[in-house]
Amino acid sequence: MGHLASTIEFIKRLIDRDEDQLLCTTLLSMKFKVIPNAEELIESIVGFSYRERIKLVHLPDVEWVAPDQPSSPENSFCTFIESFTPHVRDAVTHIVSSNSSNQVDTVLVLDFFCVSTFMDVGHELGLPSYLFFTSNYGFLCFMLSIPDRHKNKSSEFQQVDPSHPDYYLTLPGWKNPVPTSVLPTGVFNKVGGGYATYLKLARRFWDTKGIVVNTFADLEPEAAESLTSTDHAQTPPIYMVGPVVDVNGQPNPGLDQAKRDKIMNWLDDQPHSSVVFLCFGSMGIFGADQLREIATALERSGLRFLWSIRVPPPAKTTDEVLPEGFLERVGKKGMVCGWAPQTEVLAHKAIGWFVSHCGWNSTLESLWYGVPIAAWPIYAEQQMTAFRMVKELGLAVNLKLDYRAGDLVTADEIEVAVRRLMDNGSDGDALRKKVKEMSEMGRKAVMEGGSSYNAIGQLLKDILGTSN
Image 1 (tube, rainbow, N blue to C red):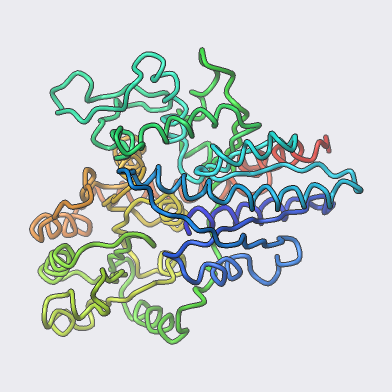
Image 2 (cartoon, rainbow, N blue to C red; image 1 turned 180 degrees about the vertical axis):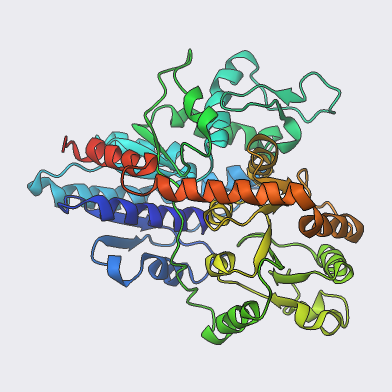
């Protein structure tokens, strides 16, 4: 849902700037079994005030059978998306035919995982395709570098020891050498098609009409200056339009209002900047052993905390996975919940730190509200994002930068890290100040005259073919 949420917020930004109402937007969404209430969530994010300007088309279900051969998550996901191609072609063809009498141009704005297939639909119909890149500019630089690397080394990346000469990579847009230990797991995968999937996607990035990135110039200035041209092709136009965040915090339709109120009322009773907020995203599920280690660390630390937990199956409740008597022992100092209204929580005066998986949406939300991050990435490009935030930008601290699925981070490690969050003196004060300054820069970027405000204006001109 992270990609979809930021995409909808981006659409709202376009609509808000389209004063002449020349823009007609249609959002095509697919159904995922892991998100059974996706349609409700999408409609809640769109919100009542935008329903007339954003037409929602929920594509029909598809029958998809997992491949018999080993397949990486990236390859499986792209294959699943490809199965929607006939439905996407039908929907886009209908949009084009409906607009033909009005002489309205149609463009496709595609998600990261959709470019390899749905750009072909655009080509068939003579439509330009833009990429909406929901991650950071540093990761975009990495993706754009893959095709050139493949020319010289036509194989997947290698997992090697730090002493190996290939352990550190020199990438455009990065000040520091990037260790291979923080690359997405899929780029090491050959048998399951992970590397081939990344290569296929990266090649299509170069063929887009433009790339819209959810970041801003003051946050990633080196990356913004690095993409000019390569031997492969001229870099597509880049539009930095972020931070695109849902500052209104649209409610989860599946959440009881009473549960939301319980969380916010508890925060109201906590001292300023005293609470550590732990949340690992919609797909961040730890096993019971890891949850118990986290609980033990929090209890020992004595810190105030709000902990959003996704209970791992087959367990149904937190009581089944947390140490016996844990909640009674921590008392009013801690609260455990399921889903939490993250933007509201991060905006609350009681929050002092955010222990995060470093999903890019969560990272931008944390920066928007000036809350420092302790990085505990889990999957996909999150390790790379965490490295960028900690080592490149100096806007986060390392809790477990090199975490991989299946690792067990001990209570001792976690306790040391969370204690350091609240006890790191002048270093902590300096980091908080830097995060607050970046928060102000991000807010200015989207205001009239700001870099992202201007980028959205330019994008609208390019899409609509106007010069006003």
